[in-house]
Amino acid sequence: MRIESIVELLSWVVMIALLLIFVPKKKLREAQIIFLIQQVMTWPLGFLVAEMNLIEYPVRFFENASRTSFTFEYFVYPAISVLFVLYYPNKQGLVKRTLYYASYCTAITVIEVFLEKYTDLIVYNSWNSYYTWLGLFVTFYLSNRYYRWFFRCYKS
Image 1: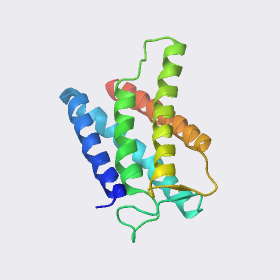
Image 2 (image 1 turned 45 degrees about the horizontal axis):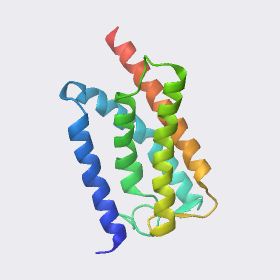
Image 3 (image 1 turned 30 degrees about the vertical axis):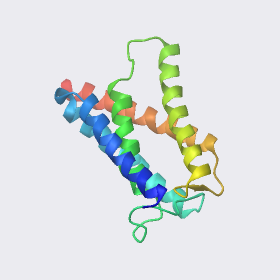
Image 4 (image 1 turned 180 degrees about the vertical axis):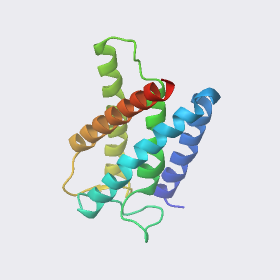
């Protein structure tokens, strides 16, 4: 088995385990909304970036169906977003909230850069890590805002 396949399978296993451990049963409905709203954003954006040939995913699941990374766009990033939003420090100061965003975006970007450098899971063509970081920040922000809006309206 290639290292890329192992990394993808481990990504699924680790994310499923993290969701099972860190999503409380009473927050399952909220986690589903977060997961789905993140998919609404990342799935078409991932297609756009791949179709514009800004990024390539040489080794991926469903390689005949799509040029994007099914694992990252459809599952891993939405799952990370669930954890990001559920544990977002709403009642903390601006510095702590900003560091929260920065730490998530930086950690994911560092992992992506590592994968780009040492595996065939991702290849940057006309892309760089700054675009990744900014895209993560914006989509985290939008999913967090949507979640806050949705559940504020829902509870009223």
